[in-house]
Image 1 (cartoon, rainbow, N blue to C red):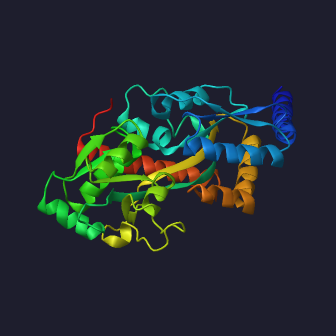
Image 2 (tube, helix red, strand yellow):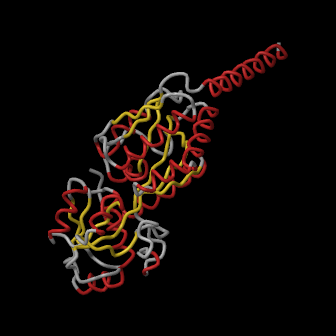
Image 3 (tube, one colour):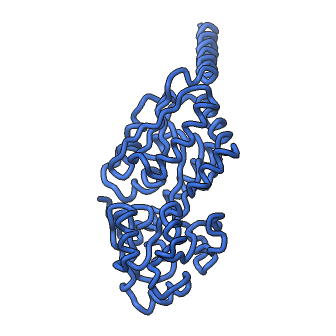
Length: 324
């Protein structure tokens, strides 16, 4: 009896392994939805379309970007978390819905670290610390000194309360021991308009959004908010090297699938994604759009997500930010 059961178990295991292997060999057999949790035209959408085009060519299938905006990214992320884990619905995710929403939003219907299978790290979207061109400080040290001499008088803007650049500003407050005043906006464009108009003094924003304004002399750059300098602004020091070691603020992209997606499919997707990001043409296309490719596998993305989540959890608790 036990021998028969053991034989049946072995046969079942072999059948399952064969099914997974076959799935990976034939994947994708139908169009793959790559969900972007934001409207079309933004940096997340642009990067997703670059990758989808490359994966379509590389994997001999069809990868189609589907925009499901709303809720600061949590609507689209929730859709993917609750979809069939077969590799045909993926989330091209940004940091807000994966590492920040848990600490800033109420009733998030998924757990980013438990409900997704990491596929690959995609890249970084650097934030630049920029200022109104008439604002006296010209670097981080001068900003800190000015803010200490004028507590509460320096306004910094964000895309909205609890967003990535709001938390970057609060992180600077904490690390520098200063008190700048947060002014939330509904997105990057109105924030930058008021920065140029002098209603606010500084902001953190993507290099994609601010580089044309810096080059036109409409605003000035104080520092990069990334661990390394940017090739697009090679002479601009980082915040970290300007006196706040370890400071890092910005957004990042990662590709994830619903938890339970076959391991062989995740591996095939991961390998093809990394190969795409290492392709010279794809890399150049992303870099020209201010996106720094960071081709890494599932284990790297899982650890990165956990570290980022822990960092922003600490910041939100320290500033007393309540989920909204």
